[in-house]
View 1 (cartoon, helix red, strand yellow):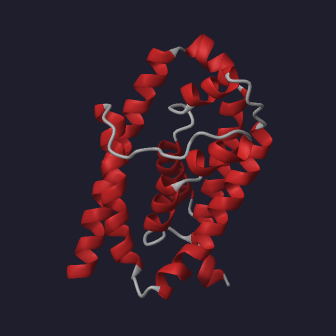
View 2 (cartoon, rainbow, N blue to C red):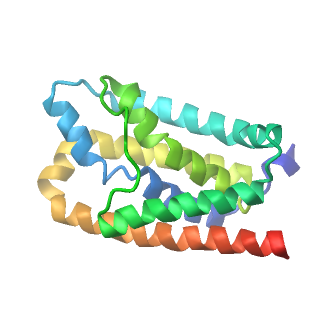
Length: 197
């Protein structure tokens, strides 16, 4: 069991936390959340966070099994996932739209906030990609910490929009975009070295 979960490593927790936080992007999604509130949608931060952590943890444990079912090695998925994350980072840095966010019209805290906005394809790809380099226990802790951070961002959405300002949130998005871009390159080239090594 210990071998399956791996060993606790604070640096793995911190780096994976920053990576996932950038992908989940609670600050960047504040305008979407505010728009939903203006439309009269009642948002429960607790419900959003519970749904998000349940979806992500389930995928973390079941995702690799799904890959085995289709005969795909985790290294190959990490390369493909790194490429997808690379494109997502380009969106954040260059303000371009590569992926169409279809199906976001909905109501309630679960859809579209928990899924697919926070626990969506991007987070799935990121989680499953970094399982090739990070121990499960550290990823579980990282997901939990991200959920806690998400809760406080959702609770303080109106305050952040009013006192922090759109400019600061925009700069934060760019900053995290550069981090995601670097990690995407590491995922692709690191796992390419493993495949061809």
